[in-house]
Image 1 (cartoon, one colour):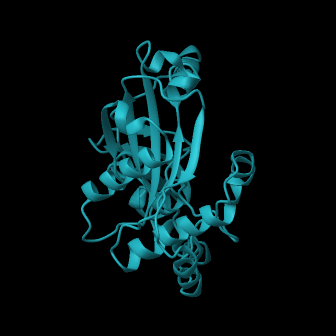
Image 2 (image 1 turned 135 degrees about the vertical axis):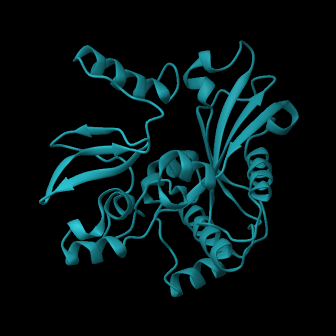
Length: 264
């Protein structure tokens, strides 16, 4: 998409404006107003209120039910079901600017080299019921790119287990890295390149500074994409903490609810 991912949001905003509506930015919603079991509108953080008989929430279902609406407005059976929902994994996201183009490929999906016992950790994670994401949606991509799907799934499982219980950054990290300036050349100056790389992390890895995960994510990206380390001009990052603030989703979960049987 020309203009990057934000072009999609901007297209929605233009459509709303054409229909006589207005899009408010920097207008955080504090609560969804409910009276007698019916939606009445929303209240912003600054106290402003907007009346409506229809409200669409694009944050997570847990955040919508427990923070914006309130559990008392829902049947107990539904509240119990929402309480049991598992969040998806989150990620450290990097934007890496390169001094020269290093690839014509649109996307890299791979695993950084290392000696972590992925199969062992994955088995423990499964036995403890810790696995909360499936990567089968990547099946076609991995098949085309010659990546072993089982190894990729094991890598994500290891991320969850080692980060959640052992407070470790695994020696093997999975990387999903679209070369976004190959999709839209306007995102980088002529002759330069811009890569967006995401590395799965455990939910809220207590005690381990995000800076360590950022460095590990950058190192993993360099190991997967030849030439990145040598041509890096700069890179910036967004951690799960940043994503949580931006998205309003607990832990900055990438897909809100985990993609597992019973939830998808």
